[in-house]
Image 1 (cartoon, helix red, strand yellow):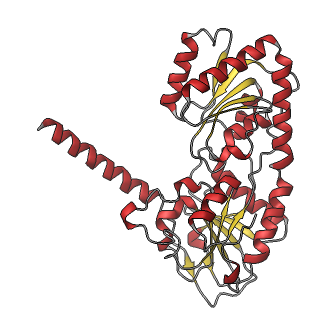
Image 2 (image 1 turned 45 degrees about the horizontal axis):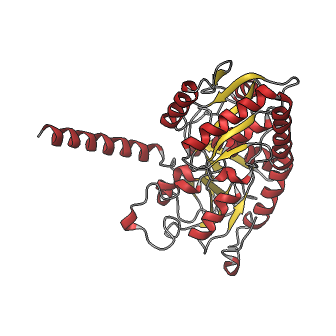
Length: 369
């Protein structure tokens, strides 16, 4: 009897939590007027959240680069006057209640608002910016999934945009009737770069990511005496500049990525010259190369412990080899994940979709990059 009451209480709490999460992921009301004139603006819907988030940082960067390229764009928040302030920006922002979209405008909807896509006006032309393909079906009941769900029944969706080759492959497989475009992530080399002098024996990690597995790993390493002489550096709740400074101070970074859209923390750690050990989060396979880091098979705790121990021993025996690997990783990130590359990606995407005329449906499902 007591167990049944406890289960009922837990179920109720889960339902309440789920309902609260759905409310947070409901997009703000958006007005549409088909008679509204204008050359067209690209609006990026964004949550009103000022906690450090690579996804929101991407939205702001897209808008900045579009405006620099002569394509009018703005981040659209629900709350008037809201702006993300955990990183320096003067990005054009607007309140959803102050904007009326017309036929020439384009609304870019992050996957965060996926559960509320049906609440957006049907005539609005939409791109879904899916920054984590592994979360696409998070709110879709398994027994209610129909062909093309959750996008097919939402009018106005013209294409999907994502941030890694890994995610693009998954989306193309799941939605063969929709074009999928890649808009690379940018790791700002002015912010994330190797230190002037080799980092001290410090290990950076993000304690909230896969916390239980982190604790197991650290227990194993401590029990073997592996962490003697090393300082653990938790990185959590910092600004972009503070995160970069912390990463530069670490010779090693532990990656606990899990089913990622891209996996920004290990990429930023690599850009900062740290030797990265750990899980790729699947999307990280785009840039985890064993020549300059130590990828670990998903869920392989033993393999993870062995890889960390090997890296720390390598640092102690010949730190220059680990430093050289960190610099090679930084160069790889710097050479691929830069603003000019994203600017070219966006130019290719919006050359097609800024035109209010419907795109050629015969091209749907193309392997666009």
